[in-house]
Amino acid sequence: MAAQTQFLHSQSQFRAGVPRRRRYNGGVKRIGLFGGSFNPVHLAHLLIARAALEELALDRLFFIPAAQSPFKPDQTVVSGAQRARLLRLALAGWTRCEVETLELDRGGVSYTIDTVRAYAVRFPDAELFWLIGADHLALLPSWREAGELARLATFVVAARPGEAFAPPAGFRVKRLTGSPTAISASEMRARVRAGQPLEPWMPAPVAEAIRNSGLYL
Image (cartoon, rainbow, N blue to C red; front, side, top):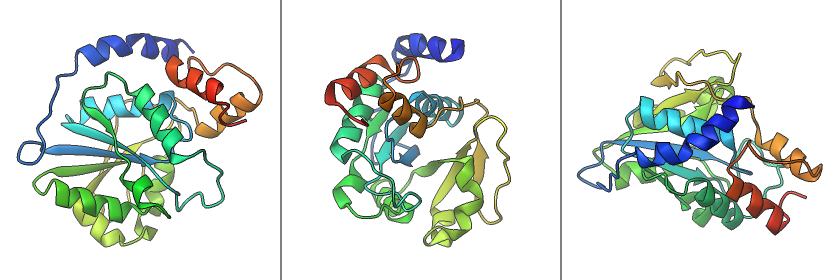
């Protein structure tokens, strides 16, 4: 709990210390891509983002909420517009981060290869880093067009405490040394249904928006 509180109180200081880098095509060299349902965004996502920005020296980090995750076909999610709005609230002031609605606009099942290809075209000279959880690491060879994914992007693993790290052959994989806290979106949804506080597991504006909009009940 103390770590979560310290992180949230330190966000304003962190934001102020992040230089603005609005160098797109021709200037951006290291692009982070953070996909997922973000249903809802919470502290662990922000810890991962901060670790990635610092450890990978990213020029930009794009949060990419999925329209429909291929790994969670039966999951009930709130609308893409609501999830994107919560992300923007959580990332207010994070000058190297953006919310990208590419997968929401495309609709249907969101496959990583389609999104990575789009960024490879958008930033042809950049190095692409795709952030994943350790639970997806062993599954990478089974992802759609895995060989092309391995060619286009480096995968960055954010392991929860106690999770194993065993990269599959043929993939470029880095591990974040920062230790994400063991928080899950399903736990946050359960807290909403139980009427329990959401702070400090997510920024106060996100928690307030969830309550005011009656999300996840």
